[in-house]
Structure formats: structure tokens, C-alpha cells
Length: 465
Image (cartoon, rainbow, N blue to C red; front, side):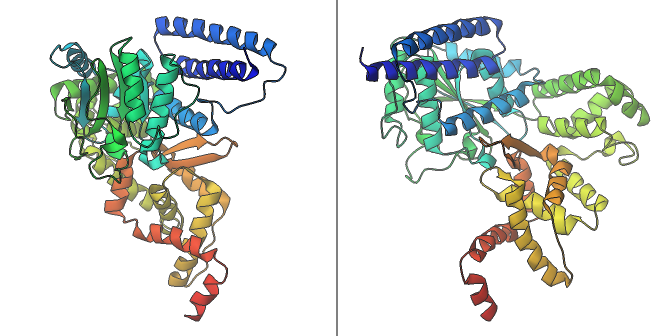
């Protein structure tokens, strides 16, 4: 075998090794773990065999292990771990999915799980990845992970490695449309079915410039035995033009959803009883009354109960701040409104000059940003604010980090390849609240102004005008 072929073979085994190691880090199935460990051993053996035949192995770009893909898999791994760590219930959704997969009158197509923001759609996809190891893609608009190119590159690479297809690299135009994706789906389906691909938050994916194209260039027709399981918001018109699809509605007032909410609250209280039970007693209610009250106030929204239960556990919500359990904010938007007003009241002097601009800036960025970058933007904002208030306002990097810490429950922290910590808003529902409740236009303008100020002579010309 020529050196070139040996190098390609080694790269292919390294790609497989990276993929199997990633799958091992997120799977919960004992059988899958054993199988993955065996495949990792095989990869290690093959790589060592090839390395002995090569005098040098420092050669090529790898299909899967690129810096960008490392970042992507890290983001997905963190999301899967976060979304599944307290996962419970949802058996009625899984049963509905399995029924469609077994339906002879539904040989291939799209299964759409539709629900309101915060109801737990992403957790369902994450749990399916963890339990079944399906190829998957999460659209995360606040992190800038929502383009067709990113999706096609990610899914095609996963499928090539998962099903051991004979490609050492992606074709040049593989991410321009779905033709290559369809080719490999047909190739896989000829050998093995069902082929299942998971996509979370299709509503967060960018709309394509081609007016008649689906988001992510999803194919209108799929080969027999191929299924896409997709989550999206109920009210969003995502213009998914496909010939075969089924809908599963995850509704907030569905008794099965409310039962899952009760189960989550029950388990949370049980797992944190030393901090939760004293709080419950302060309100003068029994544990079951507490569970029913939180369920009712949540309006069936899982993100609401995650936030509220954490606030109760850590004492941010207690009998002094809310004198009756029945006066808790109602629904996710009600919770956001209460928390925003509470933080404003607790930090009267610092809220407008510090807290508000930092949080609102994080709500408009297209990808995670560092505290240093936030500081650069906020300095521009504060220069203008100082003129309005006729007093000097200064902000430091330590102050930025203090604000980030105060709002950490609404933020997601990621680490770049250089080790720098970056931040973004955790969920689009909080972005939307800030857009409606606070207004974000001035913060968009502020970022633009910061960029303009870097242009030589621009600031001076503005002063003359």
C-alpha cells in the first residue's frame, strides 16, 4: 500500500476513533457502551498497525477532527449532559415515535414534535441521542449554530463514520444542497434500516436564501427506511415542504405532560429534601400541596419549574419574597418578568449602567463572546450614558464578570479552543422576553457604533458634524 493510501487509512481510523469516543461520552446504554468500547479498541489497534508502516504521521487534515467540529461536538455534548441529567417521563412521546416508525403506511419521512418554548423538546432529542446513539444536530441560534452548511457538514460526517462509508473527505459542494446527503442516505438504507436522524429546534435554523428550499435544505422525499425526528415550535410556520410527515403535539395542558411535571417536581424535592422541605414548611403547606401549586403556576412548562425550583432551593424565592406559594409568577414569561424586576430592585444604582447593558448585549450576539469583548461594547454604551446623566460612569472587567455571575442561570458558558471562557443567553425564550419587555435596538446600535469608532478618523469627523 502506498504512503498516500496508508495516510488516508490512518486518518479514517482516527475519524472513527473520535466519533466513537464522542458517542461513548454521551450514551447511557450499557450495551452500546460495551460495543463502543470494543470499537475504540479496534480503532486503536488499527492506528498503531498503520503507524508502524509510516516513517512520519504528521500529514493531513482529518474529516471529523477539525477545530470547528471539536467545538461543535463539545457544545452538543454539554447540551446533552445538561438536558438529560434530571430527565424523567416522556414515555407517551417515545411511544408515539415508535408507533410511527413501525407504521407500514409510513415507510419514510419526517416526525415533527411540536411544542411551546421551554416545554422540553430539546431534552427529548438529547435523551434519544443518549439512549439510542442516533445521528443528531442541535440548532442553537444564540450560539450561531443554525446554518444549513453547519448542519449538512455535521450530519454527513456523522453518517459517514457511523455507517463506515467509503469517503475520506466531503465533496466540495456537499454543503450547498442536500444532494450528497441523499446519496449517502440511499447508500445506508440499501444496507440497513431504519436510519434515524435527530434535529432539534428547526424553528431556530436560518431560512435559506432560495425561497422554495426547506430550512437546512431538508429533502422533500426520503428513501424508504429513513426518518428525521425534528422538534419545532407549535406556532412557527417553518415552511417544511415534504411529502410525508407526521406531527406529535407536546401541549402544556395535556394531562400526560402535567403528570411528567408533577413527577419532576416530586423527584426534585426528594433529591434536595434538606434544602427544599424547610422552604415548603415556611409557606405552611404540605409537600403534595406544594407540588400541585408549582404544577399549576408552571402552566406545564419545564423550563419554568427548573428555574423556580432552583430559586426556592437557593433561597432566592422564599416566604419573605413571596408570602404565598399561590402568588408565584405564572408561566415562563411571568417568571422572567418577576426576576427582571427583582434584580432591578435589588441593584437600584447599578442596574441601568451595568446589569441591563451586559444582559441585553448578550441577548443580541450571534455567538458566544468573552467578558473582554463585552467590556469593549459596554464602554461605548457607557460613554453615551455618561453624557446623558452628566456624570462619569466607568466599568471594569471584574464588574462584567460580576454581572455574568449574577445572571449565570440564564447564561451558557463555553470554553474556546484557546481556553477562553465565552457566554451566551441559554434559551431563545429569554431573548424574546428582553426584546419585547426591554427593547434591544439601542444595543444593536451600540455594537455597530463600537465597530465604527475603530475606523481611523471616524470619531473625529463625527465630532465636527
